[in-house]
Image 1: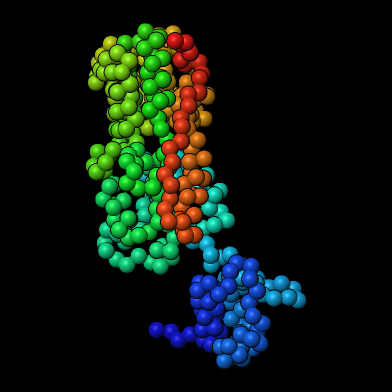
Image 2 (image 1 turned 60 degrees about the vertical axis):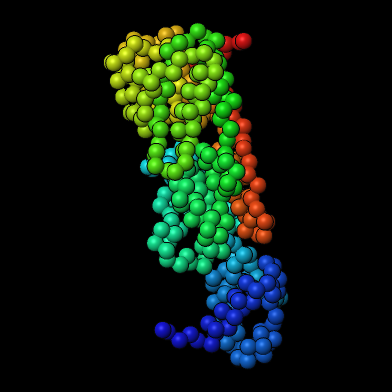
Length: 356
C-alpha cells in the first residue's frame, strides 16, 4: 500500500473534521499557523494540504481573508434507477421525471441516472456497499421487483419509489392516481354509445412480485368498463411494447382477426401514430368511425391527426417532490411522506367531449 505524504494526511484530517461537524458549509477554517500547530507540521505542509482541498472544490480562498468550507462534502450521492423499456433514459415519458429530479437535486446532491444499478449488484452479491452510496440515497423510477426493494430497505439506504404502481403504504412513494381519469375516459366511451372498446398497451413484466404500473393501468381500465356496463373483450386487448411500430402491428392484427372496435384506448400516446396508420389503411376514420384516447400527454399526441385526447400527470412535479423528500431524509428527517398526484384529461379532437 502506498504511504501518504504529510500534506495528504493533513488534508484527510481536515476532511474528517468537516464530516464530524466541526465546520459547516461557509465556515472559515483556522489560520495556517493554527492548523500547523494543531497537526504539528510545518506551515508549508498545511499550505499544500489546503491547495489539494481547493483543487477538489472542498474549500475556497477569500482574497486577503480566510479559507472557507464549500458545500461539496455536504452533497450526497443519489442514484436514480430508471425501470423502463430500453432506452428509458432517453424516453420522453421518463424524461420529465428525470428533469424534475435533476433540477431539485442540483444544489443538494450529485446524481447518477442508470438503467442498471450499482447498488443492485452489491445487494444481490452480498458485497459491501461503498460508503458514498451508503451516505446517499436511491430513487427507483418505475417498478422494481419486490425482492430488490426489500433488500434496499434492509440495507438502510434511504430510498423512495417514483411512479410506482403498488405502494400499499409499505414504502415511501411518489405516484399518480390514475383511477378517476381512466374512469372518466371509459364513462365517455359509454356515453358515446361505444360497445367494442380496444385496449392497446403492454402488461410489462409479470415476475416482479407485485403489480407494475402497466398492469395496474389495464386492471383499472377493465374495472371501469365493467362499472359503466361495457363488455371486457379480451380479443380487443393487445399486449404490446410502447413503440409506434407496435401500435401499428397491434391494431392491424386486431382488425385482421376481429370486427373493428368503435373505441381505442392507447395505454401510451406513443402507440397512437402507428395505431392511427393501421386504422387509416383499413378505411376507418378517427373520430368518425373510431374514437380514440391515450395516456401520458406526450408531445407526439398533439401532432397526430386528429390530435389525441389523453390523460396527463405532472411528471416534472412528481420528480421534484420525490427528490425533495429524499433530500430531507438525507438531512435527518425521520421518514419520507408518501404522496399521490392527481391525473387530468386533456381534451382534443380524437374524442369529442360527451356531456352527461
